[in-house]
Image (cartoon, rainbow, N blue to C red; front, side, top):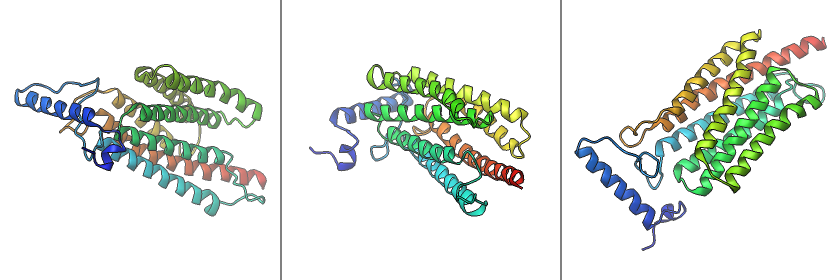
Length: 276
């Protein structure tokens, strides 16, 4: 029999559906016998909704994407319509281009994350891991350039090149050699840890008027990374540690864009004072 369209496009077939139904039946038996849930194929058993494997994680990814988009739009309106512009119609905020690139990269990463949570197959995993690697590398570049106020083009290349080389090597390894989830997690945590250290040093030393927002962002980021390391059976068959990690990203996105907007106002004020 032909499966419904919403199942076919997710590559659900009789075998995968049988695996899922048998897993759920077995878990119900374990529950009745007073046994704890166990992992199947290396993952906790999660209840599907209309063929979506991790419905709660998908919902939180979508909400985080919406929050990122709202923050980007607010930033765009601020720098182009509320703050003064240079005579050539460019913004005074020197990191404006980087922020637009960041917005596109982070929303792309969240999009593929949601797709992967919806249906976890090899293709969606590759796209999710690759986009997450690009995001991690770019945020480290952004943190370094902003924290050390790097404006010289040659120095920018010296900072950017090795980070991009590591990211490209990792992406090529995942896509053409071994799709290793454990290695990918270590690389992402490693890059994220370096980024937190860079931002943390700057946040501790700077006199920026909104440094408290950045400090709050860093503290919550550390707690979020710890949350990502947790591993427990899904509550009611839907909410696991990964879903909570995705939920924690929503307030982080709000705090981040709030800091970026404040930073744009601060740097624009500094440049206007210098021009006078």
